[in-house]
Image (cartoon, rainbow, N blue to C red; front, top):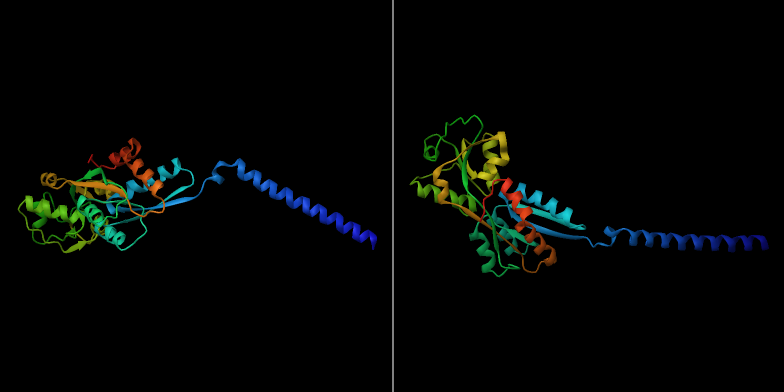
Length: 263
């Protein structure tokens, strides 16, 4: 009986020492690993659909340069995105494809800082690779039997399409109006449309899946892209760092490679 009690006390002591060593070891690991002491921070960036490829790449580069930081994106038509923010969506950064929709945000005093222009873009005609409707110019889009798809007028690419049509004195009659430039591109690449008007950057990104046709009237509608942080962001400092990264030399290089122009 005495032996049992003694052995029990010994085992209890050994267990206590082991537990203490385990806790100490865990503490040592945390202090030795710099990344483990870095708080996890996530920002949500609401960005125009035409920025999908470039901002996804910028997000990866930003996370690499900011250990512990994570960037999540919500891409869509600028008008839809700003409406979501006005209704309380938890965005930290907003990047619009035009000044008009950014103005909606600032008019409601929802910006976290003064918006800054960071890029520009112009329209280009897009057709399937075999160009079944034989489109060669903007005038051809108004021809009979052409299934044309445009962005809706409230979307930046739709507003730009209206501007170029007015400049060319054309009446365009689309068979469908989409809520984002990506939706227009999808209609063309899937063969549901003969032609569409998208941004130069979308044509470059689509590669061999489409045929791009430039037209001189596109210079009448140059879209300027502004970016800002959103008021009441829970990660305001990190959101500002992301905006600065987009404006940096590295960020501007990614945008230029995708075909965006200077603002």
